[in-house]
Image (cartoon, rainbow, N blue to C red; front, side, top):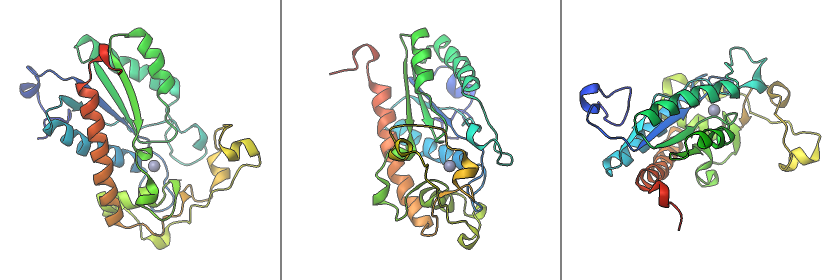
Length: 253
Ligand SMILES: [Zn+2]
């Protein structure tokens, strides 16, 4: 039993415990090119949360990893079979209920460990922060925590070399042979502001990519996934330690 994983620990261990930071991993259930499982974002969130939680716990930080929420915002993939969408307003309702529990029980800090590009918790945490001004709310995207060029040859942002390498390492039996993967080619917008990245419009996924992937997975290896997982978990572990130890009322210098 890992004492920092809520799903594994028990009332005996927790009834006299005092947790400082709750970590809520949040994934999605969606197609990942032809070759990766629909649960890819959840598997990644589970693994990174557990590994970073271990680092923080062993350093003495009172952190608790909550179960990963398996569904995310998939409004742009409405026509992709069995991509399960949670609307942002539903996510806000879920978050409010979870934060109400934390507040009632004196757990002062929350980090949402986001594992899916369509999820965006910043505006929600601004709104919830007004309701609970004495608490500390934060979110991070693990997939943006590292310089990917130091780990991978082909860049992308969905079912790419990074995600494929991670799942090859974590769940090799769930990855099809790479010959069966599509090349993850992304069509670019005809609107220059969108191409340049300073204007935004939701990507209509089925128009942007044929195989649902963005980023070519052909150079993926489990060794790359293992190395990336180790380093990203180390970085996230440090984030957990810093958040757990900061004085909320005196957190700037
Ligand atoms: Zn993904």
